Length: 84
Image 1 (tube, rainbow, N blue to C red):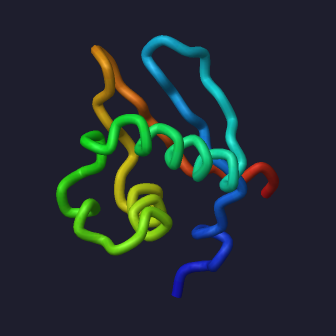
Image 2 (image 1 turned 90 degrees about the vertical axis):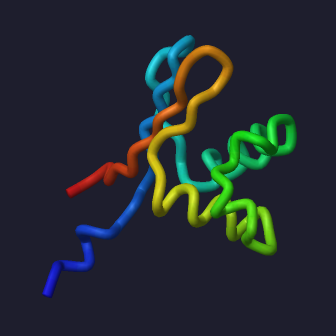
């Protein structure tokens, strides 16, 4: 059985084509996606758009995806642990 620490997420590294690398805590990235998706709801993958709430959509986005194509570039995020 896998060690549960393998699934621990302390934050996310966020990469955007026009910004420097950024570290975000879980609540920060959720707020980031809430804002982004309220401005551009068409960025959400079709299978996630079927989920009943934005919170569930963002949870699945963070769990199952790591990249979106945005305005002439990309947005990528990777889960990280801050301490071993």
